[in-house]
Length: 115
Picture 1: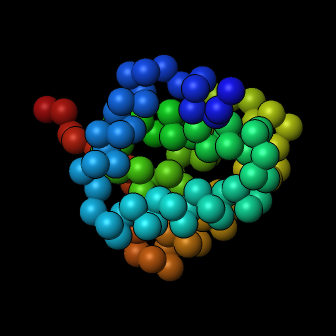
Picture 2: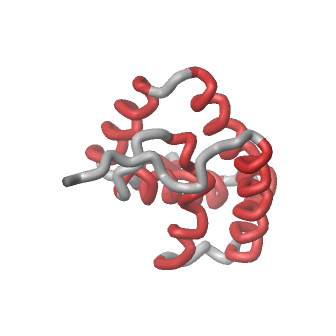
């Protein structure tokens, strides 16, 4: 079973919709952040599952771009188990935060404000 098979169909649908609306630069930032995370968490099934769960948290919180991936690692850790990889997730969060700073990415999620 793949990592994304554990996400519900609504979340997967939202992921695809978000990806389709993203510009190429944001797509590249998303891919870079996931690659950094997997290089630390491991590219095994457990590492991929953590990526899927962080993306699920991002989508569930209403973010409008997957390039916000790095902002949601800590949020995921606040309410969930890290499958024995908490230290690695925290390390990746710090490295990705520096990547985001270096590339002048926002430190707050891109969400529509509800009035």
